[in-house]
Every structure is written in structure tokens, then in C-alpha cells.
Amino acid sequence: MRRVGTVVRTAQGLAVLRTDDMDGRENGDDADHRETIGTMVLDDSLEEVGRVVDVFGPVSRPYLAMTPHDDVHLPALVGSTLYAR
Image (cartoon, rainbow, N blue to C red; front, side, top):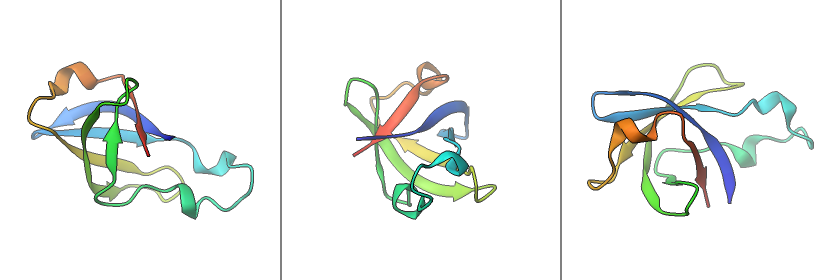
């Protein structure tokens, strides 16, 4: 499991996540750690909360748009750290 980023806001039924800083990766090869469209996203209790539907912003630290599962209350996710398998 790896940390994806933090939910910074909600907009139009999506959660917007700010990813972690990619410049600080130890091995210099951060391509294996980048999330792609379709990546399943989990909360800290390992419950699936949604899927990545868009990646945008600067290459070194992009934003992700995540569509939540039907039973997820979006405003409760703001400030939460989310993960991927």
C-alpha cells in the first residue's frame, strides 16, 4: 500500500487530492509511484472509497480527481490522507 495524497477539496461530486512531492523520492525513479486513471483509492482503514478519474496539474506534484463510491460522504474526506494498493 502506498500513500496517494490528501483530499484538499470537493467539487462537482469529485474529491480533489494533492499528491505527495515526487521530487523527494529516494531512488529517483518516481514513474512507478504515480497514480493513473482507474487506480482504486483506499482510506486509512483500508476501505475502498473511490477511483481516480483524472490527473492534472504540475508533473512534479499533480492533483488527482477521484469519483467516490455511492456510500462515501465527500465532505468527510476533506483533510484525509488516502492510499492505493
